[in-house]
Amino acid sequence: MGTVRVLLEADAPRVNCPTHGPTVRQIPWARHGAGHTRSFDQQVAWLATQCSKKAITELMRIAWRTVGSIVTRVWSDTAAGADALADLTRIGIDEISYKRRHKYLTVVVDHDSGRLVWASPGRDRATVRAFFDALEASGAGRCARITHVTADGAPWIADVVGERCPTAIRCADPFHVVGWASDALDAVRRDAWANARRGGHTRSHGWAHGRRATVSTGPALALRRVRYALWKNPENLTDRQRVKLQWIATTDPRLYRAYLLKEGLRTIFKLPADHAAEALDRWIAWARRSRIESFVTLQRRIAGHREQILAAITHGLSNGLIESVNTKIRLITRIAFGFANPAALIALAMLTLGGHRPTLPDRQ
Image 1 (cartoon, rainbow, N blue to C red):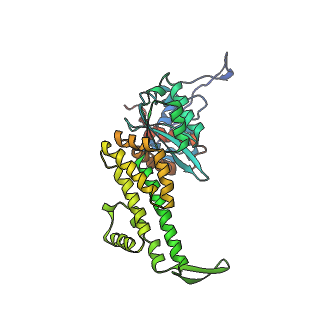
Image 2: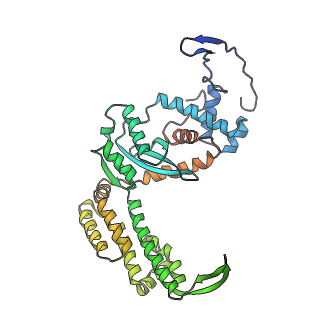
Image 3: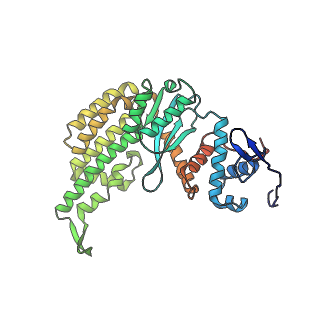
């Protein structure tokens, strides 16, 4: 109790249960099979959402893996008494890496409340189907109540959403769409850099791995260092980066045209909904005629997601809220390093971000 150690002693007689056979009798102040009281579990769960790993383990005198087991138990009881999937109409679906070797969580966030409502290991169609199965199991007809779904355009999300929520409006996340254009632009920059190196803008830099190493010089070096100026929004450019863009416009018109294509696509998301459709069609035609391979490929992808892009502009939805939750989950992932399985990580994330934060024992 605070800094005073208290030892509890109570009889726990064995009984002959008609269902489970001989077993220890249920006690009111601890969960069955747990080594700690309910109040202890509740205080550890509260600390886990508020404090660092070191503070919890030293204060409560328990191992970090024990914290994971306690958090899992507390969330299991909380989830049993609260319907986390109630009243969902507008949701966002995304994935986040939680461990090396391509270990991912699929997360679902409620756009209206900002809560994390569901998470599960995996990043495939089966994982998304598991969410809709849980949604339908929690209440008949709930899948049909979903009106808007935002995602990053991944087929494994879009296919299942179209299958389970055919009437929902699917919105493509603007950040990811502009990210596709940035990737296409960077492919053009790398081609320009490689061409400059092949043109002789290199110098010897000794030997490495049994062969002569070279480094970029002149235009090749400038193209290597210009990528941040190409990626940033024009309003955020420094004076030095603006000079670099002017140099590109003068020396490499093809790369500068790719930059204008990227900025043109980004500008579409700032337009009113009644002008965005025409602007998007004009951009697709411009990219198709650009003779820049990466943007010719991109315009096909944009054309395939045209309805979702326009829906995002019309309804003003994006995955920005989901990305904010993902950032907090990344912090929780660092705190949860050492848990034996992802269930404890998910439990801690749901207790912290799901709108059901634990309270201290005997307090409102």
